[in-house]
Image 1: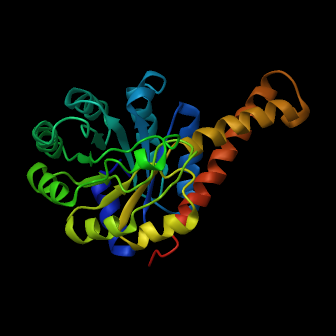
Image 2 (image 1 turned 120 degrees about the vertical axis):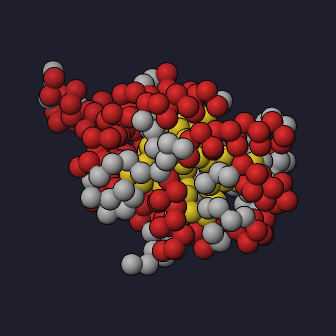
Length: 286
């Protein structure tokens, strides 16, 4: 099976009442456990690379590796740029073989955001590539809740934005935040309900790490089709590394010890991804 655009995955998620996990990789070692989890759970996933992490996860490398993984998988798989900072970067990722791109121009004017996102959507669609965009701002979990909720998605602007740009999915700001939560999350489910009722394309929630399960399930029943999880995976990987080194996993030295340490970290990622998939599949119909 080849890599597929996220529009394929999100359409299935909406019709079968579950949410797709968008799982960020921060290094190449994190790809394999995500793929294993998807196969074990028989559930499609989106592998994502954040703009800044393209420095350590070479775009061309990850694209080729994910294409190989897709051919071995029995379920659909997407590879997406996360928070693309420009049209040019998104097009570069498309050239590398990404099946979807997310462009985040939410901090520009609405007119510039519409213009550049529309241009990307037109060019990406001509190559069969999906485009996700963002409206509203998603802050850090370290920011006070008042900051996290200071620029939530405007419903009227979102409806206009989706209609004029032709994007395939919209990331919305409803009170979740990136990173580890010092404060919150305080999710505005009323806003999410109104967005779900008004916006035609699938809705995406960023900042899915450490969101309470009850909130996650409520987001799914309110129409969210994709949830992004990054920081929690990174912490699982590095936590696994630390645990393995401290406990001398395998009780061996040399090359085999190094492999055991990496395997232990990867196992922690796989366990977490499987748990998240099961949660996102809670209401999934056959």
